[in-house]
Length: 263
Image: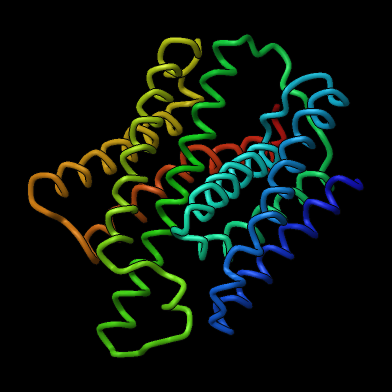
């Protein structure tokens, strides 16, 4: 519990430092969030690796554990990218979200996933990494939409200072989508190769929704390359594809594990 509380406190401290640097427009304070964020991410990872795995007897891939791991990936990527002076503002959303879901996971206890060999675990880890990357893309899409809307209305809010120029933000969005799309491709391939019941009836909805999300992200990347899609169209495609992906994995997990109380 101590590790969890310290990690949550560090996440919230990093968030507060980020917000303060934006509100007060202090350049010298724009890096103070990094060390609390890094400490929180490391402790978050240690909790899953040393506490959850060892006390539960195996890797936990159930609903709340998966949510916690995805937000760990989001917080880790935000910390790495923000340390280079780009998109630290993502932490205002990613860090509190990681703190909340880490605490929720701890309070709901550990449930080991028995009988997962290394190939199925590889598929699961690739899936979680893909979801984390594409979740970052969804946050970037929302920020792009908010920035475009504010500029179009000539509403120069204080939070606009925390964002990079519109073109840079859009370029970062599509780079993130490309990385996430490649990870999602590997996820689907490893699922088809290594998961015996990947196409079974009880996983049909999960498979179909995942493939539809993959097609949507692929269509967006093609539209960007071939037709120069940007702005509102890119935001809508990104959020729609991410919604399909959330329904595919966490929607099915929620129904199976929390509603139907299976496995």
